[in-house]
Image (cartoon, rainbow, N blue to C red; front, side, top):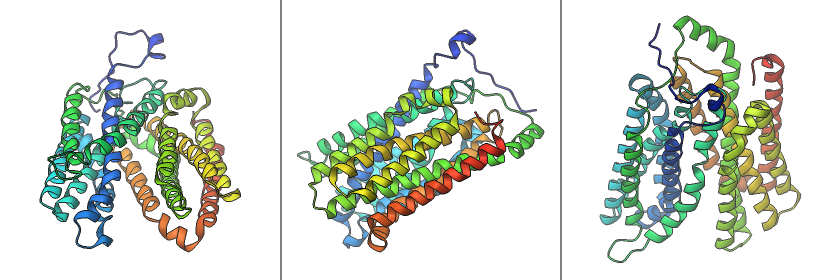
Length: 408
């Protein structure tokens, strides 16, 4: 029997069904730093890469390496947390962010492209660790509170969506410093803030573990649900990345002003994270399947708008629906995975498998928009996306038929 650790609270069981522990909000701010780093990196990576690389074709290499290291680092990060605890994993990630800021700053000072690539590799490793904040916040919480807590942590993207672009804009050209160098230096500041918040997080994984035999039986019983949860979150992330980036390319081809393109993307980002303030409540009341299905339906509506009429207003509306659809599939899939692995001694490992799948789909979604736009066109890309949604809905229907009594 593994050591049992329980969640302690002075609140009554009745209040636990309503109130979240205070440390949940610490995870919210940690996730804000995670996503703020992502926003800053995407804003400056290609520009700086183009500026200091010997060949303009290499401009996007640093950002590609960042995604590669998210993929490579996710599963090892889950094993690190399983063996040594969440705080060790998150602290390791924050140290990676510190190195990212340091090497990024000197890459610009020294005009070193190799240092820039290393910097974004460190950002990828930080992200691989930090992406587990949404899972860690559910450790030891009553099952009724887990969707709400997970959803609230994902909502940290709201702060990132507001502060990230502002920091990038304000710090890109400060007198006395090379252009964009302070954008990378700001990552060191974020790392120190992150470390300070991590210090106050719970010291242990406050959860109760089952026996090895119970664990094996639980995984066998829920293996379809675990697999479906991973596929749902990964597919939703891939589709969102594909159409978000392709929308930017399409608007650029339509000669729409950059300010208007940025405005549409900004509202898309708000739509991605703002629903998290109530997605957890919807999951608690309606169940995971209802919220996930709603997400894929919103995807289909978004893609159908793109097919029906190509205009700036329609693309902007489509991006908003795309953002909300991503939130429902990402939070819904992640929450269903957490629920299906409740009290499992292997949950960190399976969470690592899930986030590795998400990283793969997100990378495909980030690298294929230009190719698909040139090869099969705007409408073709949206038609393929609709087909993927229909296949996903069919799979969810089969899951519901087979495991309806086990799904919540």
